Image (cartoon, rainbow, N blue to C red; front, top):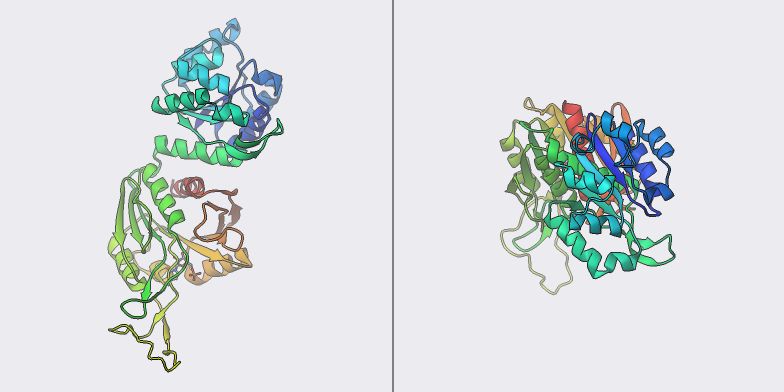
Length: 396
Ligand code: C5P
């Protein structure tokens, strides 16, 4: 998020206190943040807090002559890369949807020519009210990105959808929105493997694993959004091909190895696939029959080629090679060992004991020679956006 400018509009709801944490996270990521505090928002957080955290003046009114002379509201609405409304209250979204411009926040939102992200937070009944849902649909049709609120206990004592997502998740969504506008991987070829492999035992049976391909596909989508040419070598999964991605379907580890080799050269390789370590030594040409004797057929295994290790040793090794490690215990130790053994630049480790394979959320730990960066717990697409941002930074 380095060198990006965010205009953060803070509406009047109890969740406004979380926007202070959001400002802190965005600053940590290197973004320049300018806050606009609505009249309602100022009842929950102060301009002083936001000014201290953002290290920028805070704007609160249309009618401040000094502010208007120094920076007119039109200029303020146009100088950002992204406008974020957080929390977006029912009232603020209703005024946005209606094109009403009766304070500084809504005037900026009407005047801006920049992408807008709204992060709603309100009582569950207010969120579910047909008027609010109508307004959200109108905003989306107008091109505003609206995050889904979280579900859970609320400050008002009720339970349901309407909670503000946690600041790290909002931060990741902001990175994703910025990624789709700034395209830092333009001109780069990103090679990604995803999904499991299937290793046949006979024409009807195979060895496989629980990989769904979701994380690899999310990374491919994020890389394409960031402007890269993306080749996705995929094992058998039930995932739609992300827009702008060239997908090559394979079944076995050996087919995956050949497809990776054929896709070179690349600027980055991200090996997310859960490649089967072993395959059956001899694939039976016909279905192995149960003959009623109680005898089990011998299943002899042989090791599959290690695609990642082979790539790292190859003459055509991409300048940045990222492996993945799904572990159930001693996650970081295993990842460090894998980094050395395979010769990758980074190993992205995830704990599949706490976040089961095939799930919707992940906690990624980026392990490299310079240490470990643990990303927050995030939906897989948001985690992918952050990883792609790190990769773009590393290539820059
Ligand atoms: O050895 P392990 O399977 O735990 O290592 C995981 C990493 O190595 C992943 O990036 C995976 O895609 C890659 N890998 C591979 N070929 C194999 C096994 C794993 O490329 N045969």
